[in-house]
Image 1 (cartoon, rainbow, N blue to C red):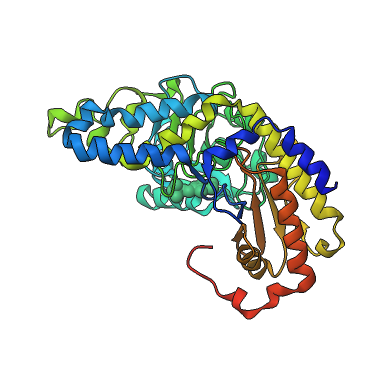
Image 2 (image 1 turned 90 degrees about the vertical axis):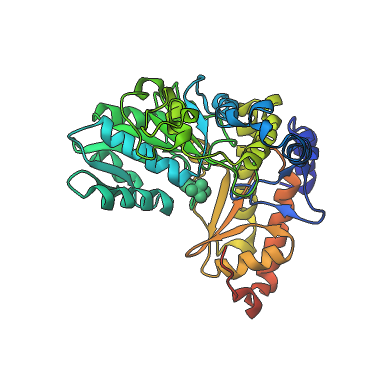
Amino acid sequence: MSTNSLEALDSADALAPLRAQFDLPAGVTYLDGNSLGALPRAVREALNQTVDTEWGSDLIASWNKHRWIDLPVTVGEAIAPLVGAAPGQLVCCDSISVNLFKLLATALALRPGRRVILSQGDNFPTDLYMAQGLESLLGQQRCELRTASSDGLLEALDSDVAVMMLTEVNFRTGEKHDMRALTQAAHDAGALVLWDLAHSAGAMPVALDACNVDMAVGCGYKFFNGGPGAPAFLYLAKRHQNAVQQPLTGWMGHRNGFEFSPQYTPGVGVSQYLGGTPGVLGMRALQAALSLFESVSMSAVRDKSLALTETFMARVAEQPSLVAFKCLTPVSPEQRGSQVSLAHPEAFAISQALIDRGIIVDFRAPDIVRFGFAPLYNRFADVAKAVSVLEDVMESRHYEDPKYQVRAKVT
Ligand SMILES: *Cc1c(COP(=O)(O)O)cnc(C)c1O
């Protein structure tokens, strides 16, 4: 496919005008929106307003006057339609890690007599770590993490499994699970499901209610563009609410925190899953970032995402200088998220050389360069640029420069 035909794809793209609503530095091709979304202009305005008018002028009265206290629910309800959830099941709070802990404990309590958390061995580490933490807290009599490969999940779903915890799109490979089928399989085995939507929410339609999902978590700072450390979200289906108490019993999840009663009484519904004081600045930023989704359909977002990744994979496959890369991302669209992962023994140095040339990607150990495509602001021109710079880096062997071997704390 020629650069000209990619220009035609950009001209025909109905989502193209959204890019102007982001602040993207000149000369940079940003392909890391699956790690940290770009800055929506609306976020800067919202933060200025929150700092100047709300915090700066109205001070503590803002908790009521500007409804800061309601933000976990308000922002949760703004996320809900984007992941196929009816109202009353989703709150915005904490990080994915903390939300996993609360929900895993809930799942074990909802399935007495079962003690296994089943997950995928190559799930995102924090998901596994949180299950390990719960395991060491409760002891293996009551909680045991079991992992299987993607292909071995169904076989591992026995009558000990309380909950199957999976990430819909694998962070390393970009492989996407069939949420509906796996949820059904877990239910058939008497288990619950907990889906991590870190790499799907904001990049594709998600149908939590329609797939009969029990629990889910997702990220505010990836495809939702809520900013560094933006709060995460948590979904608990109506049918499971109020049956058990979650373990992190903070005052924001109390039925009436401002009673200041010494005795904890859980709040009604999903609000029980709140813990401490919400980070208002982060929530305001996320709230403003979510407003960009009001004018788009998630199926249009998905169509563009698939077209971007498909175009990128096709271009990489046809370049002789790129044959040493192994594409780990499935070719079949139903099995693909919104990123393309290329494996190469020199992946780290190659990622550094790309970043040096304005192509912002990331490296995932041990040998993966990840190219993330955010349909709200990435263009087909970005695909062309990334492939041509990658060709240059490989043909020139510039990645062999020793300066590209130096590793910082965050890759
Ligand atoms: C990014 C990501 C996380 C991040 O978790 P935090 O606790 O919010 O830092 C968790 N799980 C998956 C699958 C991720 O991709």
